[in-house]
Length: 282
Ligand code: PAF
Image (cartoon, rainbow, N blue to C red; front, side, top):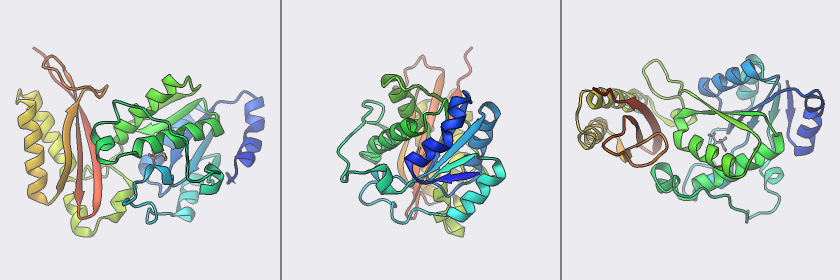
């Protein structure tokens, strides 16, 4: 496995693969890798000849009071995991390599679907994601790029700008990977203390209960209220509990595909999760 820290270095490393018309797969990450990331690398390896993983904690997607400085940076552990899973190249640029001119003056903004959920709670977050992912796609020029469905809205944003900007990459979304107790894997789980970690699986449990209730015919508003009450009772503070269609449009009474979304905090740690529910029609 090679590690490249510069755009030129990466281009040189990929040159022979490109001339041999090899299929290039790309998994963008901010490091502190867990099984969720590794599952994306495994997916990539199934259909690609060369797999590039980027490790870059992207400052433009963090708000002023968010955890950019403290975001876990675990280089040694990450590179060992990537060797083990068969990654071919790590791209680990510095902030200066990615953003030559600072402050950054260019924006890539997907409107509409970023006005809701995490876009509403974290203003500017998806502009930062769209900018860095566009740059990474231009730098790596992959045939396929792999993202986790835990970040459902992020996947929707990426798919939207890939289509609108005619970027030549196919975006593949893979299912959320969970701990045995159901907690969606996330780098931020590492911030939880033991007591919070024991409470955290309630998010998924409340989503599963909600799915059952919806399928049994309980009204959506009541189901969403039920999730909120459950989570507040066990110690969460709620950011949002909402439902949208898989296209992130408001639910109409005739919709049979509903995605439930939760963002909630335990102490200072903000966790997100979602569940796609198919309603059984008569
Ligand atoms: O999901 C993430 O880790 C980040 O948002 C991404 C896609 C690597 C962009 O910085």
